[in-house]
Image (cartoon, rainbow, N blue to C red; front, side):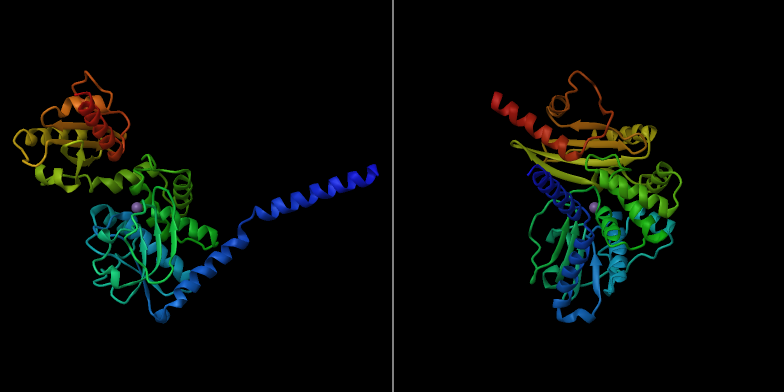
Length: 359
Ligand SMILES: [Mn+2]
């Protein structure tokens, strides 16, 4: 009897172990995922036609590089895909493409009637203008879901809370055991550094770090920091650009309580440049006024050491900023580690609302 009990117990243990380990490898699932993906694309009558992979308007490096890398990935799986862009490339993206000797994708003039894969966005306002007339077959993205892109049929929607779309594309290659060539690796590497500020921004995940390390090796880049600074040098060169243009290149507005605030973000290369630009912008702001804004904030950050200084203009703006950042009594608002704009804007809004309640 004892022997039987022991045998049953051991049998249960062995079966349990087998089931556990059988469930661990995801190899079997990967094939299934790709079957689903191809089934969706094949449902469209125009399957023999090319599917265009395209990112958002005002293209940045992630949107362009992910479109190229994802089209390349789909082609390895025997789909007919080509990357497209929806606007002019910025200096940073031009640097990456030139560095790895890759041609810029052509501009897609119209999405009407085309098979489209969206990368790096899921918002109609950021998509090519006639997106509602397209057959969207996939969305690969890492942003919040706004949900105003409509599809006529079920789409393959791959969305992960990581720092960069290229990290998701890298994962697609890995999960399907598809070799990444040096050029494609370089593009994805550049995109990840761009979207994560060289793996330092608050949205950087372990997966972004792993992807960047792997891609850096394939792309044969020796020094990541040097590559990043080279990539940003042109992008942060404001020679010949007016203070007003610098301030309004990356500008947003937000409501804080009953106040309307302006927020400008300016990237510089290092602390010295941060100081230079700060002085230029501060000089300009003494003469600037906007009738519809109550407060105006400018964040000048530098990418070498990842510090920032925030400038505040308008009645009470400095006091509110000091309180929001816990920097009361300081005459300059310097962040030893750069913070996301959203986080600062939220703190400002909270401070203003608290004041309103107290009053
Ligand atoms: Mn992105």
